[in-house]
Every structure is written in C-alpha cells, then in structure tokens.
Length: 113
Length: 114
Image (cartoon, rainbow over all chains, first blue to last red; front, side):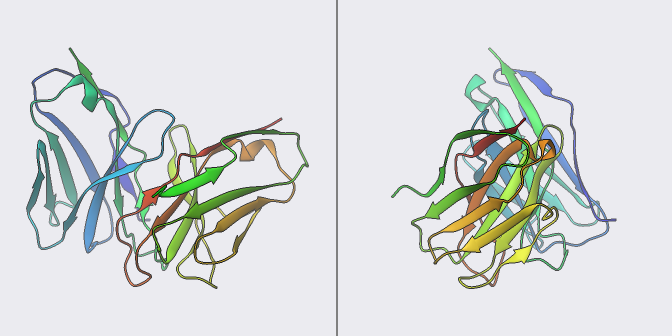
C-alpha cells in the first residue's frame, strides 16, 4: 500500500545547529511534495513545495531536497532557533484517485537554547 | 482577509448528539477539505470538495456528511456522535480544482464526545 513515513520520534538539537527531517514514501512517484509547519493548537502552515524535476529548493534558512529515486525528501533548517520548535509535516498527492493531499504524521522538532 | 475560519473552536457532545462544524474561506479558492487529526495518526482526509457543487469522500468518511453551501462555505455534520469521533478537526482550502496545490488551514475545532 502507499504510505508516507516521517520519524515519529522528536528531534532535539541545539540552537545554531542544522536540523534535518526526513520524509519517505512508497509505491508512488508524486509530481511534487510539500512541507508544512504546525504549532501546538494551531492549523498547519505551508512552507515549501518542490516538484519532481527540482532537486533542491531554498527559502531563507529552509532547504528541501527531493530524491525521486530514493523516494525521499529531506527538510533542513540551518542556524536553527528555539522559535523553529514545532511539528513539521510532509504531504504528497498519493494517487488515491482523489484530488487531495496525503499527509505524513509529522516529526516534532525541539531546538534547545 | 481572515483566510480560513472555523466555528466553534471547542465542543463537547454526548454520544448520539448531532452537530455541524462550520468553515468559511475568503480567498476565492475552489477546493475545500475537512481533516481530522488524532495523536500519532497525522491528518486524515474526511471529505473534500474540488469545486462548488461537488463533494467526494476521503479516507475516513464514515459517520460524517458535508455540504458545500457556496464557494466560500463547507460544513461538516456529525449526525450521531460517537466517542471515536473525538478529535481535532481542520478545514482547509486551496486554489484550483486542477491541481492539489498549497492548502491553507483554519485554526481547528477541538471536539470531545463523551
């Protein structure tokens, strides 16, 4: 079956370091992949979209890579700050026959000062 | 520009009661969605509406009904609430029916069914 996998364990890093989060998917070749940020008690907020023909995309301190051979996306936050602490979700169009995204369960990032 | 709004923010129901969750967007988006989010389960799609006048089932539609009232509003109804429907419900919208592009989420409704 098709699924999206994100590390369910929280990632704890020190302020100033680079955080790297992983999103793996199976049995499908999506046209694009999206990353969202979710703070406690709030709805997800869109961060970045990367298409299948793009290897890498950047936005300020954020960088996303997309390896369609490995079926994996990596999400990097450089020079991390305590304010970056949140849960990060990846999302794909998983070819379910529905014109809607399928979301991973997310990885919680905790940046220690 | 309020984006996506949801009411109510919190609700407690008894088993068997009914209620309607309201959602509205002011971004002139064509597509709207209802998700539920449970611990460790991520966001699961309940129903969606690719365009005004259409609705389709998502991954977990049982026990729910929806109405796309107009382009702005998309409501979710629980006819007979069950404890298994205790969850956080998010409404979202996106721009075009031709592509599943960026989704904009509301603040959520926290529902407890006793």
